[in-house]
Amino acid sequence: MRYVSTRGAAPELTFEDAMLTGLARDGGLYVPAEIPVMPAGDIAALAGLPYEEVAFRVMRPFTGDTFTDAEFGDLIQRAYAGFGHAARAPLVQLQPNHFLLELFHGPTLAFKDFAMQLIGQMFEAVLTRRGERVTIVGATSGDTGSAAMEAFRGLDAAQVFILYPHGRVSEVQRRQMTTVSEDNAHALAVTGTFDDCQARLKDMFNDFEFRDGVRLAGVNSINWARVLAQVVYYFTAAVSLGAPHRAVSFTVPTGNFGDVFAGYIARRMGLPIERLVVATNQNDILDRTFRSGAYTPAGVKPSISPSMDIEVSSNFERALFDAYDRDGNAVAQLMSELKAGGFGVSQGALGRLREIYASGRASEEETSAMIARANAEFGELLCPHSAVGVHVAQDHLGATPMVTLATAHPAKFPDAVEAATGIRPALPERMADLFDRPERITRVENDLKALEEVIAGQVMA
Ligand SMILES: *Cc1c(COP(=O)(O)O)cnc(C)c1O
Image 1 (cartoon, rainbow, N blue to C red):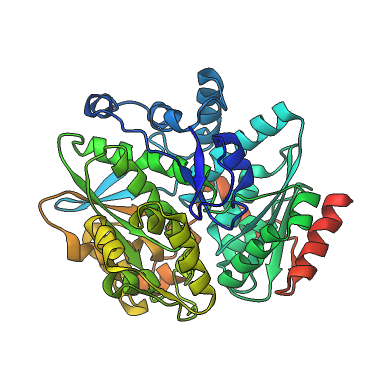
Image 2: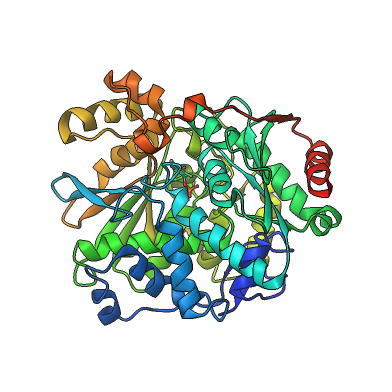
């Protein structure tokens, strides 16, 4: 299996190298040169299997000869052993023909754990075999960072640095990053927004001297291996609702477009997904784009669903690549227009996107109202991100079963949940001491050189 860049000007890589590299050297994102199709009989045979077994069968065609079957099976077992639910991704019913896929039973209570726990295991295995060490730098709007620090803490082969926007993540999210005590894990509080953190991260990858000097590796949602790990739960959910014999739709609370793009990959693999509904909060660039074709960032407005406070949605580039018939030059052109303020999606490409994706947005008031309604009517406490999804899904319910992804546990965002319902959700027992652990934070300006100095200083030390 070969991987190609969405901008068409970087070398083709194996799974192993695409995973270690993250961002391609031409600024693009790696995608498989072709998507393997799973025959309907093989999809039907997934029914009733443990999550780990489905994970193996769905991901195996993408990993080439990076791992033996036994090794890969082992990494998957280890990745999900720390989850607090035997089903890993249980499905509960909310309304007639509307289901909630609970993706928050991992160690940091958000869906990011599905990919990050596995990628931690895969990095350690590959780097140990190669006798190499890397520096992992990630930007986070909250959940990626905590999941990454949790996944990489204490591993020998990697140091991990997480850039998060100072004062713009929830207290639980911050503490999950700043209370990690292992020496190889560092939380950097950047003066700025998530988009600033993501932009500085991209700058670091484009500074080849720094990149090679510290052996920079990325685990942000641009990393193909993360997208791949997220494909699995689309299969487990759809198969338990009758796929491949029956089509299913999904509504996905969206920021960087990684999670919903994983649904698109599942669809390309042959899973009968009718619609992928992209749900945004008031930072609604994606909803505006699907409606008008104009991708014009308007600046981030902080919301009660902070993990979706994003106006430059990095994985959308992967969707554009396919919508433009895999024309890397066309994508590179759009991305340079984006630097100058925005771009328009061509009519042909927009038409192709609309065959697969629908979209909707939830205002702050609508999000709170849905948290309250879900508690009163469906008996479910939703985190604000999941509530955005459930709100948007209401416009897309019908004969096809709808699955809305619950992307975080309500206790990760207790203030918003309490404001809407009067109930303060408790952390699960296993992390009840989070507020008693000491914090370790490094404040850094929104400045490339300042960040590079902090990171290089630690790596060289
Ligand atoms: C990351 C995140 C999202 C957005 O997912 P993307 O893959 O970036 O679109 C939604 N909800 C929660 C809780 C998240 O952590």
